[in-house]
Image (tube, rainbow, N blue to C red; front, side, top):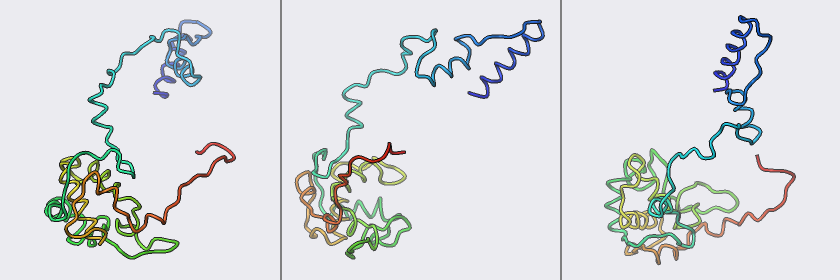
Length: 205
C-alpha cells in the first residue's frame, strides 16, 4: 500500500510538470495524506463516522469462543469419561502421533514420571504440567491435530483420564468430570511459583 501511494504521488507530480504547474499539494483524500493522518492517530477529514464492517457479536457466538478452562476447573462443561473409555479414544485419535504408550512419538511425549528438582528432565504431562485441567482445555481446542474440535465433552474427559492413568497419576478405575478433574494433584504442582514481579525500567517489548 505504501509503494502504491508513493507511485500515485509521483505520477500526479509528473502530470503536473507536463502541464506547466509548479507543484501539486497533497490533498486530504490522497493515499499519502490518509496514511500520514492514520499514523498520527487522526482520521482524514473525509472519513466516515462508521465503516459498518461486520456485525455485533451475539451472546451465542461469544459463547462458542468462550471455552477457556481455568486451573480451578471453572469453565469445565458437563460430562464424564473413564480410563477404559479414554483408551478407546486414544487408540483411534491419538496413537498415530504419540505412540501406543505415549512415549514413542513422533510428536510430543505425553508420558514421563521422572521427577526433577531445579530443572525438568522432560516436559511430559506426568512430570511437568502443573494442572490437570489444562489437559481438558488444550485437547478440546487443539486435538486431534488434523481435526480439532471433533471430540465430544465425554470423549475429552475420557482421554484425559487415560493420559493421567498412563502417567500413574490416577487409578485404572478413575472417572473424570467437572468435579474430579480439578481435584487431581499433579506431581509438578509445587514446582511452579506465581510471577508476582512488579515495576521495571520500561515497557515490555
